[in-house]
Length: 171
Image (cartoon, rainbow, N blue to C red):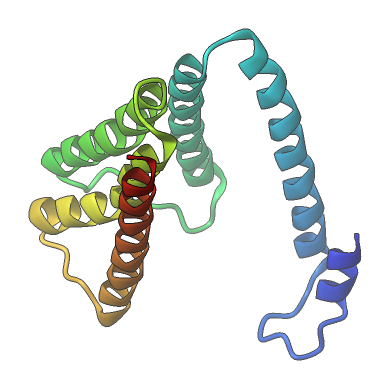
């Protein structure tokens, strides 16, 4: 609530604060809290791999339904029909391999590998997705992308260095 008060009274904001924005913040916080409470209860009953798979699958379905509903009720709908079928195929591949199977595999690997090693590969996900988009969709990278890639690589190098240091210390 203090955060909402600060946001509502921030006078130097580029975008004016509206009642809709404040209600959106409260609803977002409420749904996130509900998600955290329910996920904790559910994960006590099933393993994390199964939970992760169904969580990502339901998030993808909910995202698809949201796009459809947005197109039905929006004054400026997203033109989904004129995308070539091959692009829909590539988008589906990106969604399945980098999100659904990728996240599920990472959670599964935690059972067999050190969490630090698995988290390093989690950091590679945006890099791999970006390079897949570069190869498949011929996307170009801006200086902001390269800066983000640099930060991710610095994080990976620091993580790898910490893991190697820990392994050497243990041996």
